Image 1 (cartoon, rainbow, N blue to C red):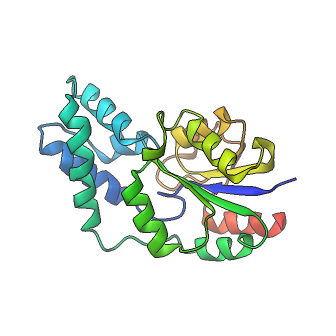
Image 2: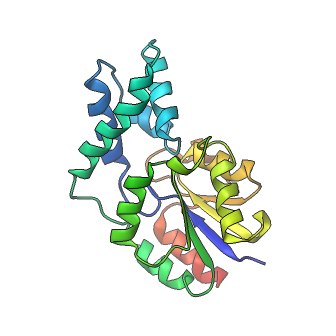
Amino acid sequence: MLKAIIFDMDGVLIDSMPYHADSWISAFNKVGISATREDIYSMEGSNSKGMVKKIFSKNKRIPEENHYRELPVIKREIFFKIKEIKTFDEIYPCLNLLKNKYKLAVVSGSDQKTVTSIIDRIFPEIFEVVITGSDVNEGKPSAEPYLNAIRKLNVKADESIVIENAPFGVEAAKNAGIYCIAIPTYIDSNQLKKADLILENHSALKEYFKKLI
């Protein structure tokens, strides 16, 4: 019996990944590291430490401890100056369908300050549990973020569904043993083939939830 639905945030709840990517690119450029949107998209769902390590590696450099500490702060300061971030059109109708019938949670690779500022401002009093990249030792694709979520929700893996949009997120959900629905918001759907179900867009997700209820 389905009891909980767990959402990724960036690219699922809010149309934010281009802004995250550009903020990371600007932060990396300040220390002489180059990156593209595609580089950042490929790492979507990982925590800040994983992002820094991967992008430095792509540039054939090894990050120092201050890079792990300072670059996420620089990125966050750039990101918080952006005012255009909005939800996907069908997300509020989806949440309204679900919020009185299932436990709802968010699992994001973004840091705690970023996630809580967005959730508190845009989705107040909707999600019972919020797991951020700051709350785990290993980010996506590790199962840890989703295992933490179902533990805090007090549900089992087979009583849950995850909604994702990135390969690392899909892999994390499957590593946790949870049924995963993917929406290819920024990448080709072929990169999400590990998901149990791929839906074309958020309108299709809303129709799926209507049938579920």
